[in-house]
Image (cartoon, rainbow, N blue to C red; front, side):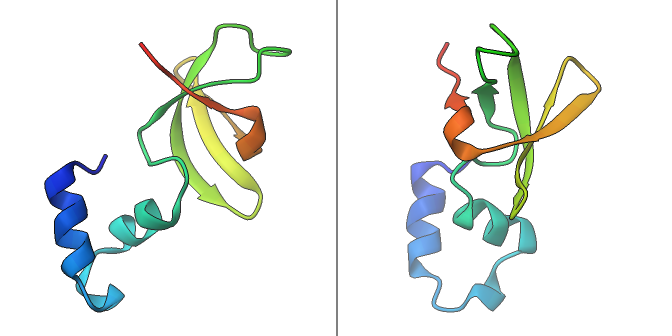
Length: 81
């Protein structure tokens, strides 16, 4: 997760070569690695997952301890406590 100070530091970087690969991926992703999301209610009612990765196939989410599947951005919702 990025906090405000990280966002300010990132805005000062002039070249993407100055940051790590995981920071590049997180900056470009809509959902950040480790962020909690609600899975689609139609198939997974009340199931919360953790974002693992995002690519052209979709967003890889791990849930129920060991299962992981790709989902479309539109199918996921940010989890709010």
